[in-house]
Image (cartoon, rainbow, N blue to C red):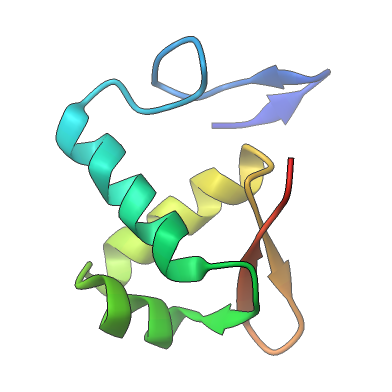
Amino acid sequence: MERRSGRRYFSGGSNGEPTNKSENLEYRRLLATMGWGPITVDMLVDRSGLTPDAVSSMLRILKLDGRAESLLGEHYRRRQG
């Protein structure tokens, strides 16, 4: 997925959410695990129960979609909005 000119490039529904229900639940679980404070990938893996590959891939998609951001020291957090 890429974001150019305000358009979302995501293989999901019209609201940017994945169309597969189990995938949608995984994204929701990851976002809930992230909370609003900084968190590392290792902490996300431990707390969410998802694999490191899944978390990394999902974080890239969430960042491109504007729903997460990376911080210094390999930390991530949700973006408001």
